[in-house]
Image 1 (cartoon, rainbow, N blue to C red):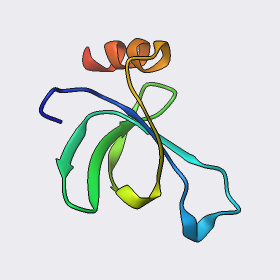
Image 2: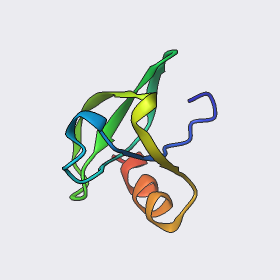
Image 3: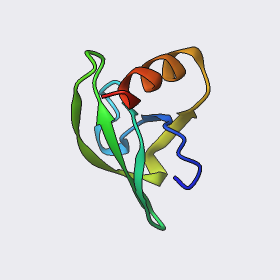
Length: 78
């Protein structure tokens, strides 16, 4: 959050383990001990809302790959 990195975060919700992993991308807005908030946008380039994500459900954190670099560059201009 301090370095203004907009990661992609993939979650696996243990309570809904039969469903697909969820993917969130955007700036981190708050950080706590067991959760953090991320202001997300969708694949169409529209801002959605802020989601609180539990750290225990994180499957993967992605940053500095071509996908997040490309879309983050675009979304920072909006």
